[in-house]
Image (spheres, rainbow, N blue to C red):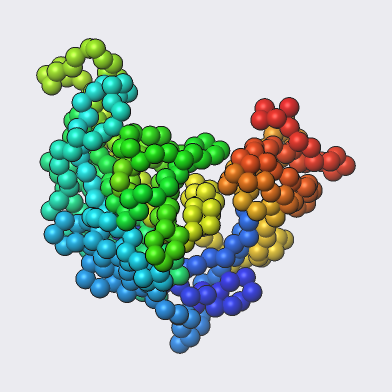
Length: 404
């Protein structure tokens, strides 16, 4: 039985261990309710006799499909692509074609792509899918899809969680192609929607013209149909480029020209140079269907969470001076994130850097117990740096990005 800090039973699902068929260990997944930048103690009680964890709903894993209560995602057995991403709440299909499909495109220029505006010369697609159903249970279902092209393969390990419409995928790529770009394509039904992409500490609206564009964590396509306003966001904090055209978003995964090659120099196959991004790569992406636009779905805040994932510390049951649940930061200002929290350069303050995420003014308070609190009033996309003295008797003060 899993219990929280109050002793209340928490639903969990046993999943397979990282080691192959290790029967003496367990791994578990559960929904953790945590305070902001804080911690909470959860405890496994193995002395509960016949008592079973609470369950509600679940994720059905039928033949190459996952179906929690909000959406249904199915894969095409012939191609390995997502055939349907159906929102059951709005009775709406979200995809306009094969989704999560790895594409291979020509990468004919130098390392920096100086003469390339768009990677749009498709030379192949990953195919020959092999499927594995990894999980089915009250909290999560997981399907793995392996496809190949030439001497390379892509494994997409995709999961749907109870109570969420988002598809979370862990991708492993073993890449051995030269002068090729790998993209993963997500064609949506929104051929004429509004495309918004994240930039550092902000966002920008762009045209869907197929050009290669930079991105910092997320890109969203929103619009409307007869059922109302909706959209779908693609989150991938570790990837920094994409293209979009006619409602299709293509996430750029890697490219493989010769290493440190600058035109007009010409590199031949027999010159013996290394090629870019060969070998094994791992990254995550998340597809987030939503009502309204990206602000309604708080997409920017979701990415803030993805870039600072939860840390699970497994230890023995023991006493301590701190409570079993504690918030280390309390922030009441809507659509504001604490993007950095660190010791000051001089060592006598704790630095909190705040950013407004949605391009709208807001206000509230921030508190770092027991160091103090301050009122916060943010302009659209404003960045502010606050210094919390570690020694008592000094007020919280504002500083520049250089902490001056």
